Length: 189
Ligand SMILES: [Zn+2]
Image 1 (cartoon, rainbow, N blue to C red):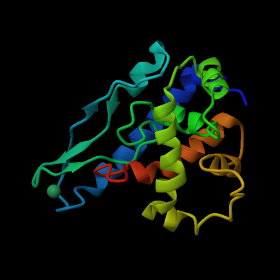
Image 2 (cartoon, rainbow, N blue to C red):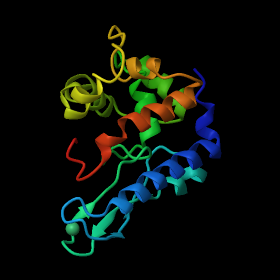
Image 3 (cartoon, rainbow, N blue to C red):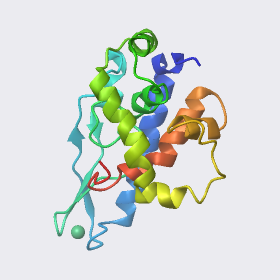
Image 4 (cartoon, protein in one colour):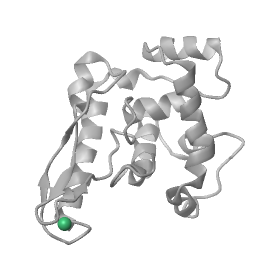
């Protein structure tokens, strides 16, 4: 598996463009509560783990506020996975490596991504994929829409294996597939 695409601006620029489309679509639909107009009210974000010269692709989370009821509406995103500090592509790629959390895995992550992530963070991520993700309403509904997965592999490896193409295409498809989880009040996290 080559993770070199993470050092290619085109990949980050594509994710940013997908997020913009998701946000435009949500804005056209108006406030989910009262149907009134949504105004831009983005959140600043400080992405952790991204190479410095790509951070500006991740420096804000697109979000809206209703002009009438003032309710916050945060559209789906492929760049941000809930409130996690690490952007979506790093979260899914690193999560795909998590079987046993060992010293050699920590070295592998350092080698691939230049990151030192603590074992406790990785345990939390693995716990989320193993225990919480399968229980989400999203997965209960979405799992019926795709052919049965090879669940010998854990999440998200099983999902990455399901999507076609080169690794960057798989990651992009997986983030689009999971993006409904990141919508709204981030209640899934
Ligand atoms: Zn409203």
